[in-house]
Length: 385
Image 1 (cartoon, rainbow, N blue to C red):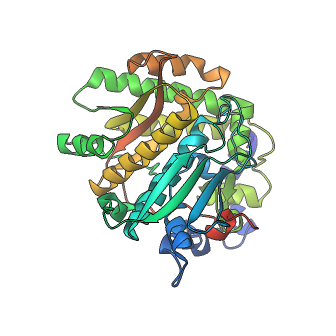
Image 2: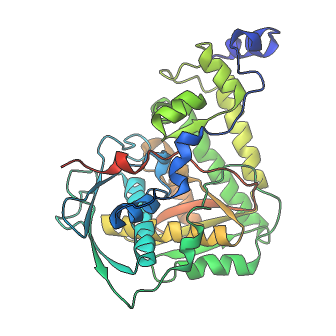
């Protein structure tokens, strides 16, 4: 959006009348876009019941790149949709692989609810190369009846889990909360850490690195346009796609309806929309009372998937404790322009490369209740015969 157009709209007295129905419009996500959060349909086959929970996992940019093949009985083959990648901001598809880990972890939890053991074999036909995704499976899952399988208490949080991007309360994180999150991932090969208001200098450093990385992504045209491609503005786009980044605020909807929100071109770095987003996110960072992170030794594909499994467990544990999380992934991305913050956060978290990799870094705190993100629905993920 051009600065001049924004000023004209802000000062116009008849703009709202130009697009009937937007004045005083609802900011609620269309119900059909979040229908998957109501749970599996009655009478669903057991694998579909399990998968109806797995598709509620968090995914980078909410792309939902999971594809499953159910043609072999009592088995689920998981693939990555090569059309749903982030080549600009996630050029090595590390975050995409983590997002397949979140899916597999919820799948495992749901299988346990049915008295089934999910035997997960990662990359049964070999792991992807470090710089590309191909059409080989991410995982083969065999479901086996097992009287000894135990239910996971975190499963109770699956429908309550949210990635909360709202401002967080200026409230310290209790020790029992951080301990509870760490306990949830103790069986996974990750090192976790926290910083809070009791450590003002490190906390300030976290905020500064996150702010700089966000600024770089937002002012680098090709990375911004990648987000624009999956930006869904208004109820019609959200209901049609049921993925990506949902935007229901009245002003962007008005601009889009008037043809003044051009998502095919990146605004200049000093555009009012860009500077406004930077200012708003910086304000959220300054009020964020704590950060959570996960570090792994190594960064191969299996490690990335396992890190995703650990992350969703951490987020579910935070949910159970009344806390919210939002990844601040910009400084963890591998595109060249963000190399400075990438090095800074690895130094700050004592994770020297190439031996260690910071797989997740997230805001952590108390936030207002929000609704769920759109989901494409189970049928969109099942490969046809």
